[in-house]
Length: 91
Image 1: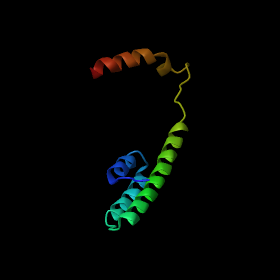
Image 2 (image 1 turned 90 degrees about the horizontal axis):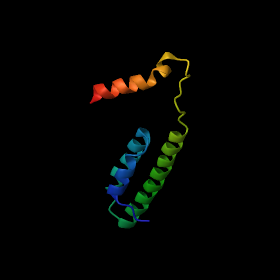
Image 3 (image 1 turned 45 degrees about the horizontal axis):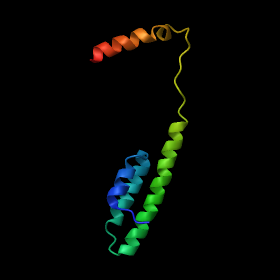
Image 4 (image 1 turned 120 degrees about the vertical axis):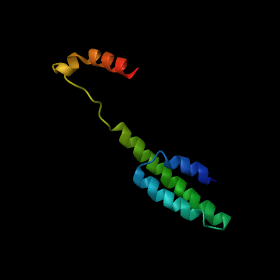
């Protein structure tokens, strides 16, 4: 598996801030490795960890509950009016 620095950098944009910082530091360290084989091995490790981090972010996103409001609330009853007024003030 051959992974480039640019490809890994773009993957880090989709992971958590903690993982992005941690893996970004490892990526910067990998830039200093002179042996191509060793560099490729480290980049592959970072790519595998970045993939796991992305899976964690995706799994967490699927667990976010949908926001619902009971119809008895006044704000729920006037939802369409609120959306219409919001849209007119934004344009």
